[in-house]
Image (cartoon, rainbow, N blue to C red):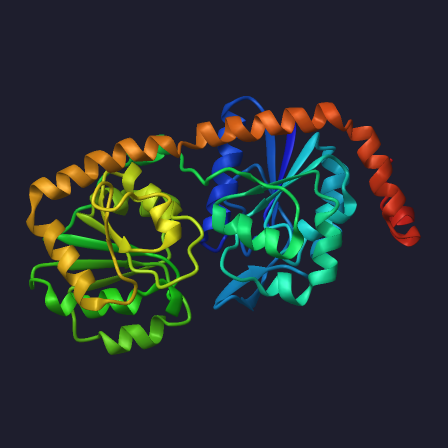
Length: 382
């Protein structure tokens, strides 16, 4: 089967949606399907199966900055790629994000599954309400990555949604090499912005033993201010952006992975990654994280923003080998539930059903009929 996966965010900028799209594509290809990813790329594509759609534009959204590509050049590249590839089915991620996902839904050259990731609130839903409702009506099957994501989409768009949780490529984490380190080590990996709570973790280090080190991966708008504020703590190692390989190796080498987010986490993929790497977890007690980590079974969960509680939980894990070992063992078992192969199988069942119910020829004809005349003339689909 020829499968197109469309991601609105630049694949050269680390992010949860990007990692899900790439991991799903890799696994579908391992299972014998011709999966290609269409996405903006600010540099060389990360995989040979990626079709780059041009550079992204940093766009403020929901307390973060998203690397989107809503420009006409990206839209034309998307149209050309969809016409050239003749996909049997298309999976668009974040369907209402401005850029190539919207273009793919507008074109509708094949049956479309839309995967909704956002939770909490969404600028796109509010600002583009009428447009996104019309676009959503063209999606053949809707998937949400969590109950929170489903509730957000339902509140603006209505409709029915299959909930298919995010997943990780377990094998990549279990076979990764280790990284040398000095002393007990905590790792943070996430965008440096207020909702991720990095400042809470760095403040908590003051209550931890002097030999504890902290690896801080990635970057973001808060990086300069945080580096200046905590410049006196030489236990903090600022790693910057990591390749997937480096991130996986670091995860498996740390004693504890800490996710101190304050809000806006629809699903804790990063927790599954740490579990798959065999690392104990301390995280904020958020609904999205509870869907992955069972409190005191797979992770220690603390009130968001509570520096003292976070420091106490980190101390417990670092000082209690039995507790840390139990968290790691339970986490490894829990990670198997979220295997990318299991998720790929669930998507393939839906892809197959959609293709059987709605032949590509009829979809192409329908898409062509809805396009403006000038676009049909320069980019015919049939």
